[in-house]
Image (cartoon, rainbow, N blue to C red; front, side, top):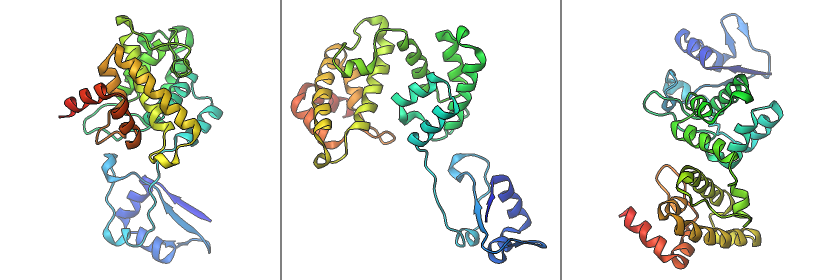
Length: 270
């Protein structure tokens, strides 16, 4: 038998000093847990700014600790079966890296599976016939991280244009170059970057023929993108302390094959 204790009960146990008895003796007051019971405590981390009570070192040393990580694949399977709004599902299929983000240090919405679920509910409640691009932006801004909300709004705009990343990757169309589609180009560049990181392995020895073909195609598209906007092309190959970038071997090939782009990137990083 499993006994799961959530954050609120954990706080109560700490205050009553009952958790020690539960861990050591498998009992709380007069109640004794059935033989074979396993106690599981679930709570937020201290760094999540979620009003948590720090465990004592004595308790920490008597428990087995497991950190749970967000799985886009698992969440997506649930979301499709549960009926999460198609806009949310399609967007997170393109940008799986935005399903979850670290809580900000200041008060503002931030992206989690829960907040994307909230956005889905809001989209359904508002009604498809009322979902203008402006409304999409307002709803997204109230649920998820500001940057993600802005890109989600652009994604909605992009749905109603002729530009789609899959068609660009397949060679059926080019990146938009019109000034009025600058925000669409930015979204496509961000999505292209995420696709490169998703598709290409970290080690060159692990690259299969399909991935090699994708890498060759990606370099060609980066060159095309650079002819429209060097800034957008640099965005595709950029990395930071917080965000993972393209594999090192792919960057080496970029530097070799597209020296002008690499030179401009190095000047920007300097």
